[in-house]
Image (cartoon, rainbow, N blue to C red; front, side, top):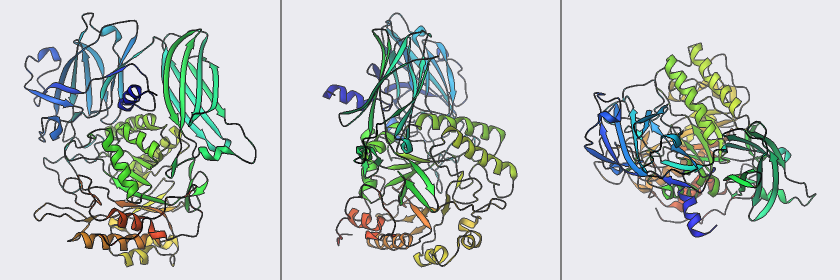
Length: 612
């Protein structure tokens, strides 16, 4: 891959489905707020009072607007140059919050509802012959609507407690690409580690012709693993590609993906009609399996202790949108440097580039659906639709090891009492397992468990000795689950007793510390100095590592986020105490549970230091 091609690849917004001919439409757009919903068509707008930097939401400083008030409708418009040719043109939106309507050259293309998932239009027949194209977008996003999945976006004017400023309109990349009339529309790549196979599902769009052939090449570190050609039947190809068994000296173990050795298999797809190449797509996959067995999480069939941190995915200047792809890479590098092997993306569907870097750098990820905050017919319908789109978008990322449709009964507030709420969680759990039978799922994380593959506990007790007393090995699990109510909530709903699933503390800590006096702070407990913060963190981690019933932990949280000052790192990503000390505490300073560990082994622990 030459330097210019590699640069364009790294800029591509969807790195597990890459084509060469594409153009980015981010940058300066005309913009206006339409709070009174005066306009219904872009032709009605004669003046554009503002400009905005896409893909940053108008609430954040990086957009150039920086208006955090209540705005239920806004409009965007920009021109771009494109001369029509024999190719078809697909227009892509990464995410628009919440409902988007799109026009090209005053022709209505369509709409999309759901603030966290991508959508696409074929704009070929609407393109202007003159070469100048006018793209307009209307985004409706009622700031007071609690029935839509909104995650941490506050419904009060100013952020309060654990909720943050809103995100309105376009907040991920807008771009277009050229394709042939007949082209590859979708790929699904699924590892089947128990059979050393890669499952491939490829879907073709366009006129249905006989004689279409799909070439699939799998390679790793320059070595060809498979190079096959298949007939396309009814616009689809479904195959399992087996990697040959070399005998006792099995090189295939070197292909296994883990955070310690994130080996990826490169995939190149070509669609041919006779001697004509119609489409060429680059992707990747990995050989890895994830499961829970007994009281442990298994990665590639071996017990693997999960050391995770809760990640809200916000930045001070750009809010939900990452400043750039490198910022996402830097976050993952910091997480790993602090001793963690995974993150729980909390109440956010992250930019696709995050998962690309997690796949390539080696980090396991839990993906969690942003919550609605009312239980109605509309809220359930919206969650089901958008959650299905989330899974469809991210199914192919090996870094994702678990799905979480609900958190702390948000959106199902009467889960412990009402059967309708219980059925909702069960339905989303089973729907998730239907869409993806290869990964575990937590129906509702934190408490009030009904349907789950892992029982997650949220407990912000700041006394390590009390945590050991509550969850230590001298208690049987039934006593623990019935005796304690972290957050005042039962851990399992009546009628849905613990069925032997593994147990993990999936939120704890939340220690607030800031350097400057007068800064507004929020946390579950507080310290007054960096030294005190380090000592508190070390003692908490020491306790957690010695609680044998836990198959892992998730500490709250990675960075300070607006008024929440309970990050291990400040909002600008500087650590609050020594990274070496942080990593030693996170990893248990060599504490072993007497069980098999990951293969390959994690890097050696950093030496202890005296730096704060």
